[in-house]
Image 1 (cartoon, rainbow, N blue to C red):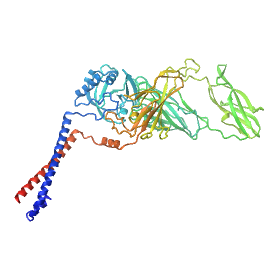
Image 2: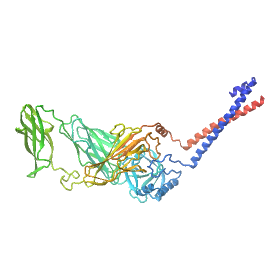
Image 3: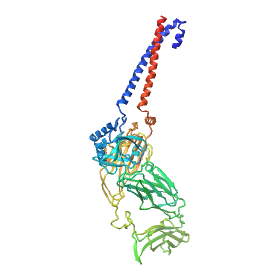
Image 4: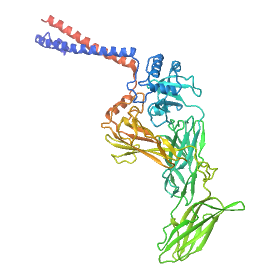
Length: 640
């Protein structure tokens, strides 16, 4: 436009009016460009000032998990040390945790700045909030509760390098190494010392000992550790013939599985199955019984657990017996029952150093339009006997067993319509004085057959009442949904337990839900931990607590805390004997947050470079605008 006006001006003096109008517009544009240049320059100066005088800091504080709230950000090691020492002096949480792990002010002064890999399996991170993973164990010191777990689990199962103060604890002999994380002030220690692990194998809680070909069955492995916990845990289980592996649960403990014929190996790529001190976990192995499994075959097997520095095998076998139902009997004749008359106790008759066991049986049958001639007893030890029928279609007999063992006694009814048998005329008996469950070297009747330590099993169930989902684990809940949690505590030990306290950490759940009913429990508003009055639990009895929450509406869009990868992650997750996770739908704000996190980390240098470039471009157009105005003023004076 400017070039066109100047070119045509000598031949068309009337264009002077347009030049005057164009000059006025350019002066107005000069004002907006000057204002833009001033604001951009101020923004650049502010960015430079923050880089020079304001060190990086956490944009979001962790919701209740930080040992030092807001972290210990600083541009020098001295600044980070001073913040840690200041928190240790004034904050009761920091003081209690540092005191428990033997960290002194002098230890902090002797630290240096280093970077830790969150995926290193030897690191254990300490925070205020329970996450129920990574071999977590929670403790209380001076009235302050805190939880220790694998560092990998604490950082949301993500590997990264994090900045920390690293030093040595002068008063700790086992492994004095420690660290304090910059982003949250959480303490990190290393696992060390001899490990002592144990393994037990039983049938699943709802699994009977009898199965049919094609059935699914469940074995339960219970494993625990003593003083120093255990890490790098793997379990090897050699399944018996006619049994094949299908799956295992929970999968968050062992995320890897190797199947080689009948041998299966469960292990964790990131130490999520690690055990804390005196911590216990369970894993269920789901198998399938082969279609060609023979009737009466006994399917037993053992398992072995291996940790970083210890190995243990199960001391008992978990057995399944295959039972194929016989063909349906003839409608005219039925075998009604086979019972053991001598009761549960075994009768002993010792002759020539051989224990003989005599057991009495009674069998009965029914006949319609048919006659019963005799009953054939198969005693299961290779011997059989044919006994003539009585007028009542019922007979009694006895048999002497010379060896201990399990036997299947079967009765066949011989009639004018052929031979018939059935489940009612099969009986499984054990010829042996029962062995002590807790010490196989003692009989069950021995008064010393007691479990020395009480054993409590904890498990948790979640139900989405709104969506009518009985098992809400790994399902998605929506705003306004009502969730019911059931905490089940069972005494599986050999003695009654008195004054047992049930405690549940609901911090992660209550980020997205409101507590409706705690079943008489008291909640700590600062930690969201629910505690119930102490109860007595008798042998074999259960104590059940019900918690009801309602998903907030709308679902909060609170960003994840920089120092806690498990906070506000659209997952309600916690642990009570087993992990329960309920997912929440992704919101647009959270999707943007995720995308932003995936963008490259440019840092202050790149930001300033971009700012300088923007200022240069705006300055160029501003100066060009002023130049054109001056040229137009000269032209107007020349043609005036």
